[in-house]
Image (cartoon, rainbow, N blue to C red; front, top):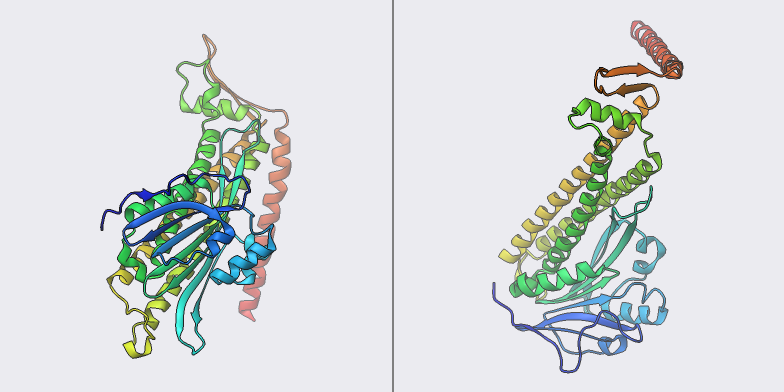
Length: 387
């Protein structure tokens, strides 16, 4: 790994977050050992003729959705298919697609990919039962030109991902790996995984707050044990709207992680196909590079990222199970049982609500119906075996 030179900023220009006309794009590119970070107008960028090893363009949210002409120019220049802009694709929780590009004589001229990730980020600063959240509906398009040129467009990514990706590319991605068009995907997915990790652990914090809710209400008992604390929480009125809100976000978290895992599986499979197609004789490769250690390194790292996403899915599922446990416990105990901690000469005691009959009125018939159904099923099963 080499140490790249400092990022060059042209004199009199700074890569600001926003621009006056709203139609300027921030980008990062590498030419040789030199990195350049800048911003320029869309038309100017589309006409830019230099050939960097890597160019990453950060497209502001919805800028091309609102401008069909600019969207068409971008699609023509960077080989983005029309379906990438459709409602289904823009709102999809995740997908991946790849395609080789060909010249007039059928020769392979490059490799293009298009993919999306969706992340739901929650915070704990809401009022009442509300849990604030934000959707990151991120789209990416890559264009690889042999032997080692890469162009990446990042759509609707949060600023934190943009900053991290800039820093990661400048400090960590070796130039020789650009011969593999999927090496840039590892850098992008690394930062996307960080967003998923933050989102999952944010939800874990909300679940933990629910689990600890009863303990904060026991300040008047200096030496209360766990059972006393727990009973006091259950004696209070559960905040069901808040529990429902947290559960809804956890369901979404697991849904988008499932889609991310499928997206990563597709990336791994397409990378494997790309490598296998170039493992033939050099005369049939039409000038494309043979697989090298860089290809194997990329493949192994993609597998690692796949496992990381599966681990985060497991954490998300655990969040859901923990929350369901709290909801079930609160429903079972609410209003029917009450634990009164001891104080002074009064010993602790349990009491039963006069409405306990409701519990048996519901559970009794359900239990009886379940047993009857099981008995009928058993008799029919034995009859069928005899016949």
